[in-house]
Image (cartoon, rainbow, N blue to C red; front, side, top):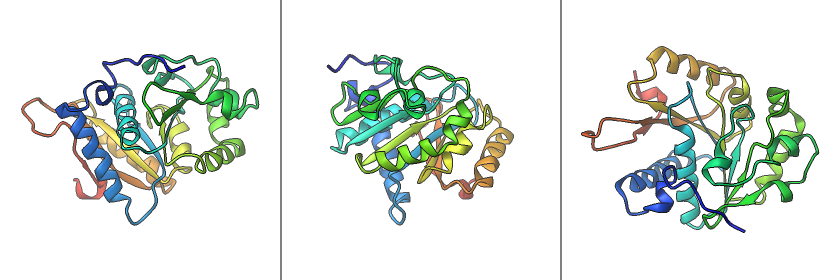
Length: 229
């Protein structure tokens, strides 16, 4: 049974004709354009620091893909401070952590959301060894298996500068999107986060500038890192 959603976070579902919803659709289009020469079926969304809006961004991005008719799986790979289950008002008794430790099956852990075509694999209970679970054969095999069943898989991770988990996860993905809160994150933080991802040869799709001033016409802007000084 599908449950209600947190309408403050999922603006694309609640108000699909709004300006903000259109910007999320533009983000989806830009990702497609940047990925046209390289399949990006498995995409990680992260940030340098906490509180930059990456989780809201990934939830709305997932919704735009689903509303397009694609079969989408949203994975909460933040095994330290999970939040996606709360946004979609779903239980978190089972999820990625229990799936990777053999405590449940993918069929039992993956849940339908109120958004058609959009499923959620919540984090599950917080484990003692998050990094080890992410950097495991079980994680690699799980993602390869799930890619057979979904058109798009989006993975939410902790901030890059907080823990090693997102750097590890980036090596398993086809592309990475970095969300940056304008006026909040220093260039040095962003540069350091990018360096960590570059060190493992993560494929950067671009950055999303979030929380720009209202007078700015674009709430988000996405471009390759290489074009920005």
